[in-house]
Image (cartoon, rainbow, N blue to C red; front, side, top):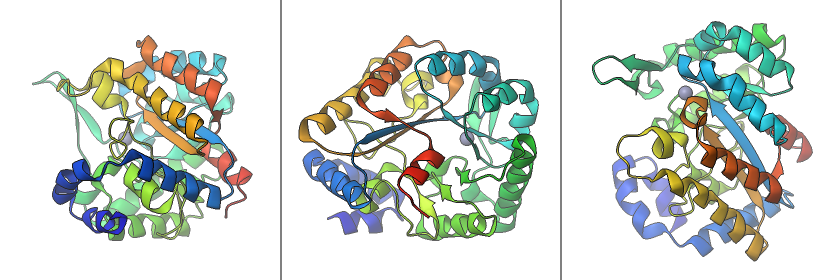
Length: 298
Ligand SMILES: [Zn+2]
């Protein structure tokens, strides 16, 4: 069954209709935990990363960071190069507090649409030539490594949900490998259930993001719960991620909860912070680089 799902990942429309029939949570999570154990993972880890795609993120990011820091959580930041330069002061302070930054490309990939008064996505990697993808990754690397004065180790594809085909991920990993990167965290939860919480199928270490409890294959993102106008997901359901934790604990399962959010979506929402606070009590908060080090992965 899982291999059929793997074929379907190259066909998003079919995959969407198939997802509903796939959800046997016991099977999925048990498999995921077993694959985690095989990697030497002995507990439940929790990684929080922030995609900072707009200038609204710059306005709130310091406040959000401080609140999380007080809970003992240091998020990992994915900021496109252009926005890193615009929010240099804010991101400088965050970097000095010890947070890791990952390359998230150079160009801004979200714009404000004055007609609808909403942010909209653009600059999708699946819609541009390979040379432009490479250029965007290299430019993002240059800006970020100059900013931090460090060699960058990790990357997340902009709008990564639209860039999941094997050949696409192979291309990204090839570019990252040439740049001397250690990992990418650009895959949807399905990959975690197929290959485990960390895998190297595409050339480099890949760490899939985690899904929702009610739909383990759907990313638990802040857009759906806190920003989207579709109201498909009630904000209150965000706390359901707690159910995953309870389940893991009850069944004695191990793994990595790899959640990401956009700071501007959650800055004024106590439910987000309540969820994170809970997670810190029941799982071990860590960053990507520290986790890779801890598991002695190459
Ligand atoms: Zn982004």
